[in-house]
Image (cartoon, rainbow, N blue to C red; front, side, top):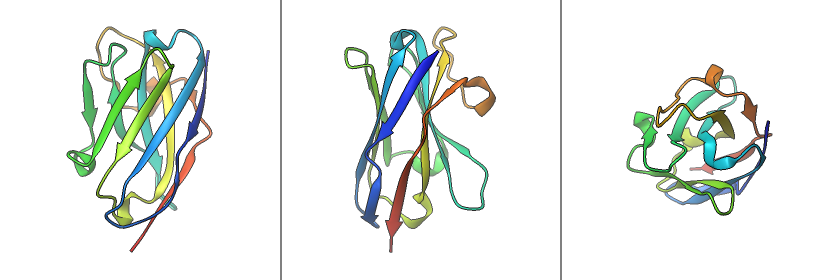
Length: 126
């Protein structure tokens, strides 16, 4: 099991930036594929970004490509989501998730992830 705690959410104006952090404990962080998901009010939770256990591979949903960057620091057991050029449509609760690594395979579906954080609210005002 991996325990995950997100932080860094808040209120920001459109065009601004935030950096989310996800601190992990439990199973070796370096053997986990880490993902970020989000859920806006009244909508289903959706994939945002994923990073492989080595940190060498990443993938993003189309709407955040070029604006968001996922990274990891295995020494700190922490994964980050740098979010730039935020817009109102990015408003959501953001969740960090962990899955046992399958090599460098990038996992995009919720069902692949067994461990979830409690979420952190990101609100972007116009």
